Length: 468
Image (cartoon, rainbow, N blue to C red):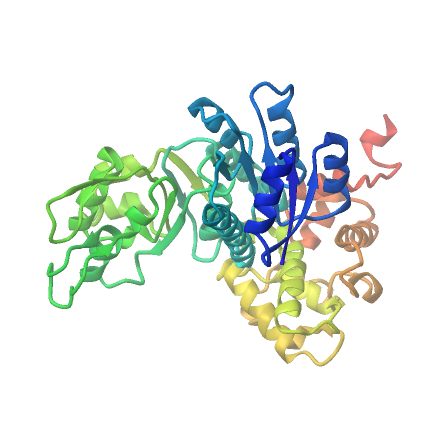
């Protein structure tokens, strides 16, 4: 049974609606605006029938205010005035349907079922989106290094446009991850976001995957297939590993980018689409061009807004924050709530390793450690990191880890900033508060350490700026 609120219908209309929805919904009737608002504040309704007349003052203000208060609740507007401009205004202010009396019982029942179905689909889409490995707000992306902060500012600005973005960087640096963040902060966020990895699909099937095919286009094509570009119409297409596309297919892709049109494989009907493209590659496309493997004109067409993602070793300030985020994620998914953090030596190893596989390798390392660990803290031996890939910080005083207390590292409730501050303070003390020496000991640049010191508000009377 659905809880339904009906506002400002006449007695005859109320009786008709009650008989139409008998056994389907529990109806609450009101014709007083204050009482209507009190009902909205006191109870969650599955559906609202709102009667509006053009002569009533603030008629659309009530509709708009109701939609803002409960955006997930479908609102079906009823009115005796069947005017096109009135219907358009109602829809623009949040109505999901518009009914003009006399309305049959079947029409009322159908309007209710359709409104509830659309609401449930939105809930499902929102749930599925939240299950994806995408951050929907740039502020939630882990970016402690200055280079990543600059990149996020640029991507946030790029997201407001429809221009093509080319994201380059090593494998595992987060190209696919950030492409989703760009889409869901763009004007196209309510339209499809389609991802395709060009390296994972055989060359002879990739054209059909991108552009679709007609029935009988080739052996096994027993029915028409809609391609990814058609599915992404109005939204965003993410082409990962674009450097793997064959020269022949590059020509067709160039036409889509320039003319927004293509034909399916085996067809002659021109299909027009409006798609924003984000491309990514870990290859040096300029060298691909020199080798004759990539079209120069296509390169210039996709390289409108270029972004290079740095390797994880180039943003060391992000390693420990990312490790903590990934630890929380895997503890939830693997049902290991007893694991509260990293040991002192594990933190040192994570910080010292140069991560040739970048964030993907970091995620795999932590997932494995969560599975293997029997203690409440992740210990160094369960990280299984190769010694040959350790950086300067791993060799501090014969391999001793940076001095982070067990208490500070225990528990996700403990502040990550507190762990960082304790590590920096102890290292500064060991280096007699000489920032250059402390930066070398921590394995970071003096500039990066100075940024951390300023952000954490660390001071010392011997420092020149504090003397002034």
